[in-house]
Each structure stands twice: as structure tokens, then as C-alpha cells.
Length: 561
Image (spheres, rainbow, N blue to C red):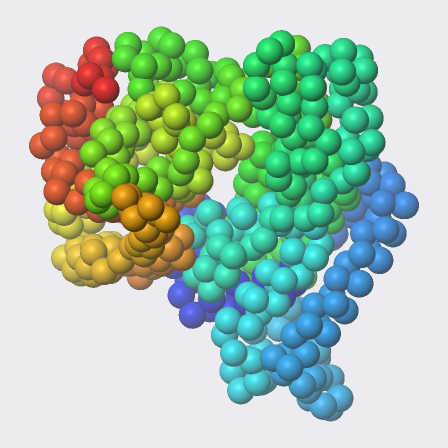
């Protein structure tokens, strides 16, 4: 965590606009002039108050966590750090000589004690020079990613949060954590049986007709088993034992560490470190809250049923509340293939792919406009072409919401991006974000034009295989998630360089839009998304941005599937 924050601070020094500043948009009144002695005593009193608050928070977290969990995680962290150092021994720089190390430590202490100059966290020159000469820029990000994978569930989720938050973290970390692995050995079946039975209050086979002992998939937080419930094929997502205690200990440490860092280096408060950690904590708790995911599935299903035409073309897993609990989530099993997989006869063109894509685009865009949330992780594995011809949206652990205060700017940005109008897009992004200086819209528009050119340069990978009978061909089209992330980072960088700090919700929204843009170019390259009458909900979104009377309407139905 310290390595990550240090690298983040270095990035802040290079580009002070790359991070939000508290009160950046507020009007500040000049403080009354005080005598030096008065200022010193006030500063000392404020510092003592912060130390007292930090001590109280640390004591509270220690009570909530318990000494055994804290000691166990400390041991696990030491072991993970050692294993990561051993693995990366050939890449890591040699430690500085003792005399230089002592000088670094001394200058760090002096920098922390020095009065703030408003220029961001101060990294002593001797440290910056040594890092520049001995460590490659991407090395810290890779070390932290490997360390987080070893530290387990909580830190894997932090890695996923970093990967999905290019508006908050340096590009090197966002790109590195795209490859954060969330695959762990499964827990034994008897432990899973005990959790499910404790959650549901009945023996396993009194609830389910059958329950597969071997999981379909196993991740750091949960594993998924196939089962049959009341005659229906379902999947059962079960949280692994010990994750609750692990999460409580880790989140407590992160909270205290963040406050300690702000106490030691007060300038870190200017990049809203505490706010970023609070956002991270809320996001992680949302993803781990099976009751909330169940409500998300219920909300999405009710929204589909209440929107004419949507249930005919799309669906999501149906949850079963009476077969679910705090650590268990039971839902229908959807059978299909990822949206980008094509299987055809005699040709690599799938006539049904375009229709499926139109339905997926309409449903997702409609959810942004009219549902309580939108699916915020629509990579190909989470958008399925089902065997019954419908689109299936799965994995509602990550969802997004567009705050009311930025909705108008988001709608205008969507319309401008669809029309490749970089001038209008620059104005919309300026209005949406927090700007701490006058924005040069001409320069901003030119930078955005460069982002579009980078987007056009993304090429898909197509793998074609011939069947043994030579009567048919199958083609699999894949997208490089890293390329999509690179485009999003380019957009955030363009905004940062022009003094605009974009909200995280917008980053989530844009990433999904980029996925769909790639899907269109793969499956329907000739589609005109602005003028295609089948994309009724997308046209409604641009109408809202245009401000005509249709902005208030909700399309009555989808085109025939």
C-alpha cells in the first residue's frame, strides 16, 4: 500500500491536475492575518487533534478486528511480501547503500515536517533520483499487483477497483491491474455444504434436488456450483469461509493506513486519499454483499418485465430468495456463448449476430436511461448470446449509477461522442468534471480528436477453425481488454492535461460504451448507430441531449427481434 501511494504521489507531482482536490470548485475567503506565534499554536493544536482522532480510529479498528485476525494478516502480509520479492528478485533494484538509505529516511522525515507549500506531496530529490536511476516506471505497479494477488480476496478486489477507476489512479496501475488474477483453488465440498446449510437452515438435499460437488468456477471470494432447484437448472454462488474476517481486518488496516499517511504527509489530503479509500471500501462491500446482488437481479428483472418488449429480447439470472442467504446466492443458469463468439455454416458471417447486438445495445442503453442502475462490466463474458435467441446479462456484482447533477452533461457527451463532434464533447466534459482552471476548449478538442484516432486503431483478433467435415467454419472474435483500457486512459489523460477531473461514474460508463463500440465494429461494421431505426433507445439518449420533446419520453417498445 505504501509503495502504491508513493508512486501515486510521484504521479501527482508530475501532474497536479491528475487528482481531485477538495474544495476545488468552492469559493474561498481569505483567512484573517495572524501573528506567527498564533499560527504556530493553531497549527500545533490542529495536529494534536488529528493525532488524537487517528489514535481513536486505530483503537476502534483494533477492537473490531481482534488481535488474532490482525496478527494473522500481519504474518500473511510478511510472507506475501517475501514471496513477491523472491519471485521478482531479478527485476528489483538493489537496495541503496546504508549511508544513502539513512539520507533518504532523514530527508523523508524532514519533508513531512516542513510546512506545506501547496505543491503536492514532496518526494525528496535524493529518492526521486535513485528511483529514476534504478527502478523502471512499471516495476512498482507489477510488484503491487503480484503482492495483491498473494494477499487474497480483499486485495484482489482492490486491484479490480483500480483497474475500473482510471479517473482515480495512475495509468501504470490501471493497466497492470487489468491482468489481476482472481482464480484460486476451490474450497472442499464439506465446507461449502456447511455454509449453505447454515445459511438456509436445512440439509442441502432438502433444499436442492441435486448439487454438484465440483465447482464450475472458483475465485478469491466465492465459488460457483451447478445445482437443480425445484426442477430448474441453477447456479449457486457461495462465499468462501473466513472471507468475512479477512475483509474486516484488511479494510480496517486500509482505513487506518490511509489516515496515517494523511497524518504523516498532510499534502496527501489534497488528493482526497481518504475519499478514494472510502469509495473503494463502499465498492468492495457492494461486490461482496450477496443480498445486494440479489436485489440488483430482482430490480433488473422487474425493470425488464415493466419495459414493453425488453423481456422478449433480453434476460438476466432469476434469483431465488428462499434458496439464498448472507453467504449463498441461488439463481437460474443461463446457457449460451459470449457475444463475440460466432459459429456459422460455410461462412464467417453470422446473420443473427447483428440482431443480437442491436438487442444488447438497446437494453443496456435503456438501463442507463430508465433503470435504477446500469451493468458496469459488459465485457464479452458477461453479455451472452443465449440458446433461445435472447441476450443474457450476467454478474451484477458491479453496477453503476449516473448522479443527477451530471446527467445532462453525460447525455450531451454521449451524443457528441456518437457524432464525433469533439468541440461539443469538450464542452460537455468540462461541464461534467471539476475544473480548477480555465479550460482551453480548442486544445481540449484537439486532444480528444487524438483519442478517437486511437480508438479507430484498435484491431480485433479473429480465429477461424474448420470443422472435421469441412462443411462449416467457426470463428471466434476477441477483444483485447487492455486496448479498451488504453483508450479510456487516453481520454482521462486528455481531460487531466486540460484541467478537468472526471467523476468515477463517468469512467465506468465510458468503459462500457467502448466495449459496445468494439462489438459494433466486430459484428456489424456497417451499422450506423446514429441513424439505425432499430436502435431506438440510443436515439432516445441523443434526443435527451438535444433537448427536444422526446427527451421525456420512454420508447414504447423495441423493434421486432
